[in-house]
Amino acid sequence: EIYAALEKSPRYEEVLSYVLQALKKQVGSASSFTDFVKEVPFLTSGAFKVISSYCREADKVATGLNTMRALILLRIPARAKALTFVLEATIAADDFLRQPAIRLAASDLFLRSEFAGTVEEWGREQLQRASSDPDAAPRLYSVFMALCAQEPRRLFREILELWVRVENSAFRASLKTD
Picture 1 (tube, rainbow, N blue to C red):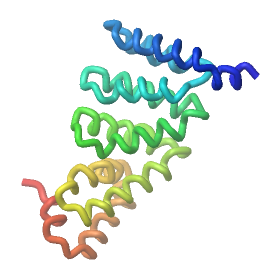
Picture 2: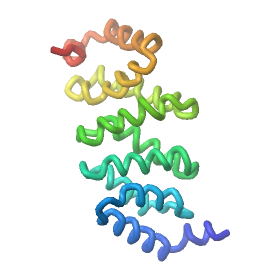
Picture 3: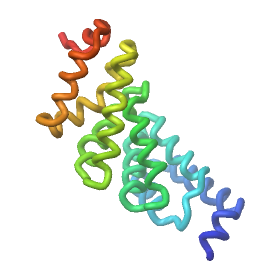
Picture 4: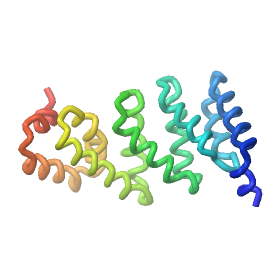
């Protein structure tokens, strides 16, 4: 009953956003921020925006992704939204966000049975997108390559099959390394 009241309270949203912003400004508040987010009774959309903003700042990206990981693992109501954010971050234009998001997705979430299918499907979709968008291909297929490193026997075959099917020489060139 109290959660329903909090969810509808603009004052709760305002206070929660204020506290999250204040924690953001404090030096050395990384674990405090994540711990606080894990314990709040209800995460509002405004709170999620503040958490997401951490991921868009190079000096706070680790805290932001760690908090997203905590939401995925511990806060079932926020799980889908946080997982979607992390997966979308794996193809972000900013390398400072993309690389740690890929590590989180491939080296942590993919290894957990409850998330493996979702992460693998995301990676597969990005690999397919990469075959039709050679300019963005390296950014798009990176997540699938990281998954492939986790399960090479099964997933590497898909890259080979795509290579054979795709006539796009720009995509093939994007897969080559010097």
